[in-house]
Image (cartoon, rainbow, N blue to C red):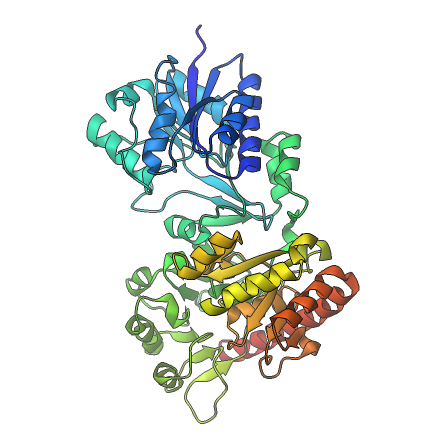
Length: 563
């Protein structure tokens, strides 16, 4: 019987070390599966001899193509297989790692006559944080869709599209554009047959590096996601041990369950502990893209008290009938499209017991309206003689702090754009980068600040990613702003916070918070903390003690209000 000839289509750009590692894995699979199938990998690159060398030493067919528009580049890669007499092609990004089981299952389904296949979900591994996520696929109404990575199309479909799977001139949304083009030419009732990644032990792992980092929040918006508690052990179950060792760079933490806060934030429903029929639920209401953001602390605290927490979009929540003893946790106003929706949810206190998260909300008319409601407020200044009750700040505290060696990273969060260049210059001048200390900025994507950071070669996180990923080994750097939740994130993780200018009221070195006069002094202090384990441990112990006291205070107050 003739062995199937399977084309492997990808495109490469930047990240030479990661791409070389992925391509060498494909070469390994090609050899290992040689008695079952012929794997013919093809790639389009845009960096001349650099791209070509990586491709050819790993046995890839290579085409040089401009990186823009992207759809044209992918079609150039596909065109390399036109004369290779392939039976079909599978599609992967240059940072996607399929395991052997993917190809074995592919062969099984091909023998049954299925010729349009995909995987129902995939995994994401963050090389910087060492964390890993299981994305379980699209929720309704896209539950029949499959991600772009791991799609397989039989040759007959590709020929119907004249070997151009993607429309010309596209820079984004290529996965959906390919699917729509396929249905337009081959039938509107077409869907990819879904291979079940969890049940069938199919691992397609998207490796995220510091150069390109897709938004975890956008994935959480599209479908449910859970955290893999021990990424190293999980990867060793699915991949060669030599590859797994390469995935974990010297600075990549090897996390286990006890290194992480207990959080089920990525699940739509996360029951914890015992509950009675009369206890009621706690509902966290936020837009899907933001479910992994500021709610983390409060959800963690609620769950630690053995309460059921369910996360819903505003639309899902407003369609639901209220039940006795239900508690509505409303995220900060800037999580919503308008203040009206936030106010509407807070005003539902006649139907629910409402907890409004006011962290980052300025003292103004909206906050005054909230004080006038008989609800509980988190993160608002305490005030007497008002119907509202103010709860202490909740904290999400890991079972134990991460090792000292993993914490040499500095987060400069939400700084005014005017200070970004100054902070970057101070960072370089202090030679912190020579100590394997990485500087990260929390900025809004698509802003001038973002462009500045890219130009200077410094990595940035999107604003909401700072909160949701819970980088527990980062140092916060606050430059003259009222501290937001990101300031306390470091303390909850057992890491100190360094302020340029005056520290927030009530916070001193006893809580792991340090004042400095200017950026130069701040960088010197950061250099001392990240190079001296004893200094770090002392500051870490203070920060953790402060956070754990805050967590206990929140639990006590919450228990009194909502027994």
